[in-house]
Image 1 (cartoon, rainbow over the protein chains, first blue to last red):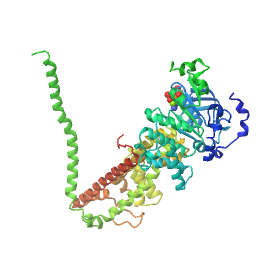
Image 2 (cartoon, helix red, strand yellow):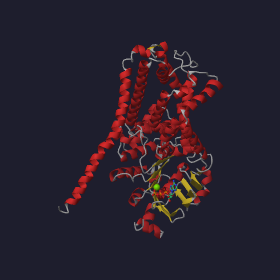
Image 3 (tube, each protein chain N blue to C red):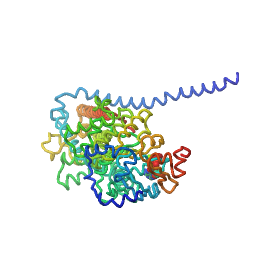
Length: 298
Length: 296
Ligand SMILES: Nc1ncnc2c1ncn2[C@@H]1O[C@H](COP(=O)(O)OP(=O)(O)OP(=O)(O)O)[C@@H](O)[C@H]1O
Ligand SMILES: [Mg+2]
């Protein structure tokens, strides 16, 4: 199924700089045709096509032979036990893997048919285009305002009114505006963990990305803050292409449109099964998947 | 005597041992503090009546026995200013190179660090001889404030690089990844995120270097010389506070009064600089919401 997309891939030769999404383009994606569940998303061109991805850390295999399509506007949940390469996979989607010492990547990661590991890829544009959120909220230790302003200024936006408008827009989008509007000049580290995580999401949104990568975004948060973030990811459906790593199977089922189950038998993580969330959870093809989603192996 | 009382007795004798050792342990820091207090008290006692507006502004007369230290303060400011203005940018650049660009365990870094360690341990008089040969003679700056400032810069460079590199490395990998994940270029992450986060360490290192520079005599005798006139250009010879104290104490009978006054000024200067450092770090803490301790 996945390979049929490759045939039509060449007409999609895009450069990342040209990918800067306009808000109305993003809005258009919320139209029912795109946002109504996994079946509808199958129709479009995948955002990422990962082919035969192999990753090693100082010679030790962390991922081997990963093939995967990630669909436009969907929420792809990555599940699997600890050490199966979920974070590693996520880091390959925007080449943050470059920053990890000893990490070697083989294979193709096509973002709109552009192989992001090909030489000459504009990493700055790529990472502005694909935001990332981590397990531990990582606001810069400065004011809330400067956290949001910094990526905007770095991306060349100087107009004060525009910066202020985007900051308000993104804080509103993560439901933080009313909570912090009076303390924008206070340290971001003074916020609660859940608020910090939402600030980090807002910070990624300021750049108007097409996609968001989230590595266990709730695992450092209490149940209420987790609920808030899950709701937020639900709202992202159709607006952003989201890839979420999670250990929480209930969460994967609640927020995911697609699921990929990773497993590492010692020779690097592989995908055991992937597909729409209902199929993987309710009618898995593989016995291992069934045992895992039933919580009988960890 | 019942068996139960035995452990109690043992316990008591243990307590008694602690009772004896505690004052002994306390006596050491008390003694150290007392010696320091005595030194500072003596300096304050001898120097206090010397410190006056005329002493701080007038030129020295009669080899420094009379008059003030105005030109000496000016020369000190210029020499230390040149020293910091050259050493700080060089040290920041070198530390960024070592900590952020070169691979952590590369040969280049190992060699550089060894060289820096060696340099940090070199006696200051060696820097004086080097400064004389290089800045004064080879570059033709002669006995001048410029030669002195540059010599001090080479002397404090290893200290600055050491502390700046350490504080850059102490910034968590998180912050680098957060910056890169937002599409910030590496230089932008360094300038906007890492250096601001490392600034308390940079300030502390600068203060340490400044202290060394202010205290220095040996390296300056060969380079900036000890002319006590008001400097008219950076190529004039100039005398720093430390050299003035040294000269008054060693070569000028009857110079101990002005020497104490000058010493008191030096001590006050260092206290003010330390106060400024703590104040800046307090501001930094309030702004960032982070905690920072000088001794990690
Ligand atoms: N920086 C690194 N250096 C060396 N090996 C690494 C590094 N990061 C990860 N690994 C190894 O690669 C494999 C996959 O790691 P990864 O962090 O991607 O797993 P994960 O599925 O995200 O696990 P978790 O659920 O615990 O976060 C593991 O075996 C891990 O030990
Ligand atoms: Mg992980």
